[in-house]
Each structure stands twice: as structure tokens, then as C-alpha cells.
Length: 124
Image (tube, rainbow, N blue to C red; front, side, top):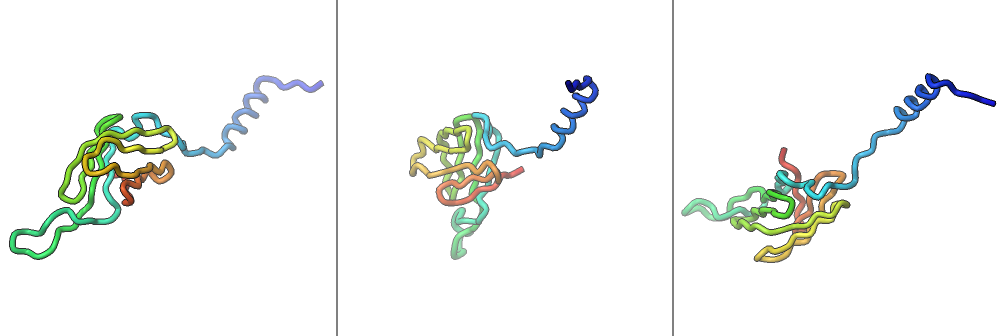
């Protein structure tokens, strides 16, 4: 018969635990986006130029998740507040917006959001 003493067994467990690579979580808690702000990766129209100027002013659009169910969407010269639902796998479901119901998804691996066909990155 083969017997292991406690010291050898603890050593084997420690070696096995250290050799397993760390994996990034692919799920979010329900309040995983609360307090986060995202800005569009591309600049878009944010309003008209100063009086007398021709053209529009370009800038970033923003998403701010103020609670586990409320998101503020700043786009162009418009501000909307609506609801959202976030599934543990990152599926993002905007609800209750006046202008339209944007399509959206959260990419857990990059911490970016595709919102109404525009990518947003997290503002630290």
C-alpha cells in the first residue's frame, strides 16, 4: 500500500493549485455596471457650432449606469434616461427609451458596450 503523509499531500495540492492558469470571469453580477461610465470610441455630432459658424461640433457620446436598472444616454445634443436589464452572461436589454429602443450588448472580455451600433469604452 501507498500512504501519503500530510506534508506531502499539502505540497501536492499547492503545486496543483499554482499550475492552474487564472481565468477571467465571463459573467457579471446584476449590479455589474452600476457606477460605470462609457464613452463612444468614435466621435459623433454633439451639436451645432457657435453662432455664425458653419457645421457641427464633434465629440463623444456617453452612457452612465446610475443604478442596477437606470442608464443615462447622452448622444448628439440629446439626453435620455431609460431602464436596462443585464443578464449574467452580459446580454444587455435597454428598455423605456422615448426615441427608440436601442439594440445593445456588453462584451465581458473587453469591458465595452455595443449600443445602437456604436462601440463604447469604459471611462476610468
